[in-house]
Length: 413
Ligand SMILES: [Zn+2]
Image (tube, rainbow, N blue to C red; front, side, top):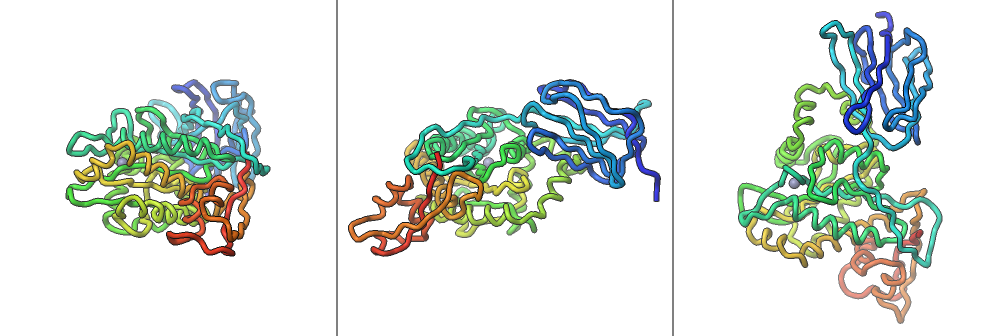
């Protein structure tokens, strides 16, 4: 077995809004570093590395609180850096060049996006943390997304739907809203994915409007990440085109130099998040079936970058085809966009009625429908819409039978 690689130095400097750490090594790492944030501490595991010099000096700079704890073991070196704020990160290797040694570069950046606490209280309060919903309107800034025949831009339509949905989530007790963007600006795909991770989102919803060369194609599609990859050739094509929106990522995919990306892919072995995503996506598509023709009646699976955050149940909603003239017309209608937002909110509520996170402010209980009650009374009492109540309980249209057991939420403030 080869001698362990050695860490010969660590340099820390400002880099953009964040900091850059450069680890000088005597040779290339044999395995990807494992980087994760645990509370306010960043753990960096360098497999197969022995430390060579004195203690690394880490100044208080940007998100770094200053100081580092270091442990060496047979498996490698572990560094723990206390943080002042939540960060996202990326890492890559640089070969020896111009007299420099082998380097591992780790960039830490403050997390973008706005976290907004839900403010309205509710009479039925529970303990626990708020449920975190992350909304991700697609495209933005220099990236208009798809453009309809009348010039309607996907980035504008999906932002408007997302802002309406955001208002509804903000007014839901026991929920916290996070958005990847709430203005017309470009956000790289990796930043969107990291936001869901860093904010420990219980649900990540990416919102888009579809386009297809054939103008008659119409309807909604809901995508969830699949471990095994794409459902169909169309899904593979779509994943390629969506992922290609990020020039950095294009580079990463061809070269696979980004160790963080490897790590994310490795961590995807957890299936709980994917099962939750599939359940939520199923409710979303059943909800949308009430307002919009479905392009695909079942949840589709694809390998989108924005859906790849480990442990974050994630879905991508293609609201309608902006390339279809009738659907472009509908997407231009503020009432239709509002209806889409309400429907998506119903699906989000129904998902958390069915599967409230264990440590969250939400829990579920049963309500037996009384003789003098209708569904609207029950929905009102538990802070739901009738549609959300129907979705959560898989009720057909029409009134529920007296005596039927309805699953309803207890929402924390
Ligand atoms: Zn899009």
